[in-house]
Image 1 (cartoon, rainbow, N blue to C red):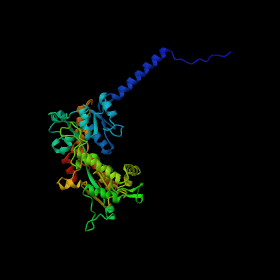
Image 2: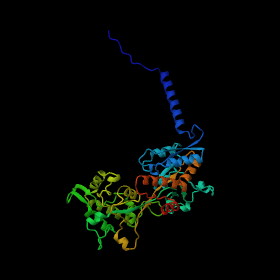
Image 3: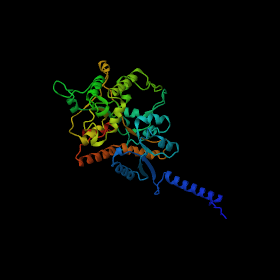
Image 4: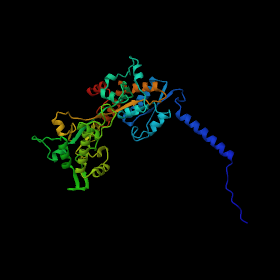
Length: 412
């Protein structure tokens, strides 16, 4: 006689008890993770920072805690490749009322996030500063365009713009040229000095002549050395659109103007350069095979020219300080230069922001004051300088949004 197998079953009351225990554990964990005070009674400031600030940021945080014993700073990151482009975690934290208190934030995105109501307008805090505070933020000391980029007012309104971030860095794009490759290609003046391209038309010609393929004349065989490509480095459509005299939005910032003739011209130029080189696929394949550091294609002679941020000068100083190098204004359309247009480039950088639902806004602003103070900037730069010198490398100050502080460091 066969016995029936019986499957073990959990009584209904057991399911209820387990569910209640799970909810209790989840509630306890949520409380621990989101509470704003530490076990010693100090208020916890959460700072989403970046490795760009260097190791000395921890010394600066320690000094802030010593000067402000009511606060404890926890530095972490967003665990996202791009806080502004991959924004889900930060936006969810803001919507849920548990965001970090201070975020190192890309300035170009401040207007978009301010329009969503995700950031705190800092004007009341700026106005309430103690004029005798050594960490006083003086907006007049900053490059005006960094403050403009960190400000926002609804498009088409007469409202004065709010200030949603305090700039902490600034950068600029330049045209980097391996002048040794120019000599090899015969691009020299009557004195034998390298002759960089000045116009789009010359740049396109140089890009073609200086690009080398695995099989000479066969663009499908793969690129061994790239002369130039529009998006290799740190330069995009908006760079070329501005050079062509275009804008991506109307002056009121209420309408996108991507189909305006100058922007179309810029995009067409980019496509033509890529097509000359065998197509964007060939250039992308070349890029994907490259590495960074001392194996960067520009540093090892596999890339002749590129438009990139000034921070690339650091890589040159670190890995090839004696290379033949030229740094110039990016080439412009010939007809625009003939009409008297000045060379165009673009600048950006980062700022410290306070999310709209941050729990310790007063402490967050005090922390931003400390970070952006002369003492804070000098401490971070001193750490970088000492590390570079200990490694036998050249130290170059990083540009700060505060013009007075940056120019003082450069002069020293």
